[in-house]
Length: 131
Image 1 (cartoon, rainbow, N blue to C red):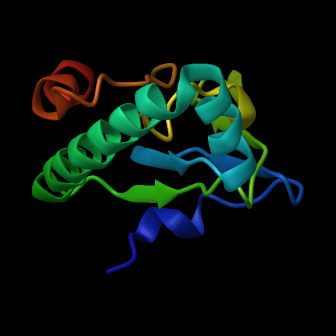
Image 2 (cartoon, rainbow, N blue to C red):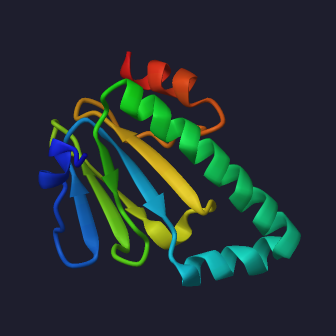
């Protein structure tokens, strides 16, 4: 099921995704970005971390669905930047190729700056940010 918020999360330019609604944004890095991380951490460190990320991403997705939080997908092979717009007119820009995990999440509500949660505790992070 597609979330309604994906209609409001639209490209500003071809490489920038605008997000202005209460949502979670999931960023999956592309193969070039993943290869960079593999070289940085070594094969064993990279693959252990990537396996952990897949496990924790499943838990995070489950928490988001249970709380009916719209999830926006921002694949690293499609976007270079995320631009989070807040209700006070301020914006935060994230450059995707600077992220240090294969799978990354950001929480956004228009009244606050975007937040990158610790995906090892998705329920606690959800409650701390949204409740």
